[in-house]
Amino acid sequence: MIGEYLQREIDVGSFPAAAWAVGSASRGIKNEGALGCAVAVPLRIRATLDTIFDVASLTKPLITATLVLQAVGDGRIALDDRFEGFTYRALLTHTSGLTAWLPLYAFPDPLQAIRDSPRESGRVYSDLNFVLLWYALERLYGDYVARARERILAPLGVDALFRPPVSLKPRIAATEWGQRWEMKMCAERKIAFDGFRQTLIWGETHDGNSHHLGGTAGNAGLFATARAVFRIAQAFVNGELVPRDLIGLGWDKPTPGSLATAMLSPSAFGHTGFTGTSVWIDGDRIFVLLTNRVHPVAAANAMQRIRGEFHRLALR
Image (tube, rainbow, N blue to C red; front, side, top):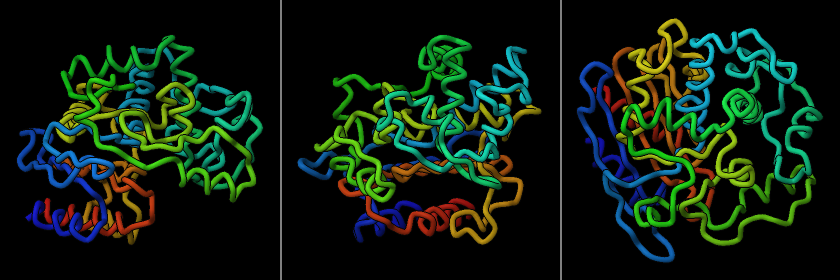
């Protein structure tokens, strides 16, 4: 049923490819599959269970938040310690007041640009929170990617990585042709930048800040299969990665009335990614859906509705 539904969405052009993994934290994957074309233009490569997707903002909870919470568990930091004037708790929960988005690559000093950025009231989902956490982790451990590999990816043996080598390109789902979406966002903000990528983004992180800061900036940059995302989420909720009293921090909660999460319980937590990815955990259940909905154009589509229907079918 999940496959039939996602194939219909592929047929109407919602995304070229989809891969999914559904199951439980206690028993593992029960239902999985892959459909469509991981690359649709300028050539066609079919998606398989081994297709690696740019999971975009899933990097935030799966890697960055996990590393921060491990640092808390190891006694290196406390949640209410401050970094650049903000507590780790505020950065993890998007309550710092930092503005939602800023093209840090358009400024000579990205960290100073964050310091100088405007503040907003209330809870504001902001990539800048996790970019700051990335800076903090770099200061703590020296190399964010090496730390992620050592403490998360290698112990779990998952098919996930940062900065994929060219040899893996045939397995990777392509994303946008050029950075037209971010060009538009910069134009709306009257921020000049002449270094946008103009060709197919394939095998390198789609997110501009992550790309221009070396392939990861804490907010994006992870490439993974659906199975790998499932396994990391499973390890997180099972307490294999962080202390059990910290589970859930750094993740989103269901939004009242959301088409994507109305069918989940209030205690569920999860995250979405701009490239068309999502992972949600509801009790013992885990739902992973990866698409490349920005390929070849990052146009608006009904991903929230699609995620919701995927969750409903997975719950049956």
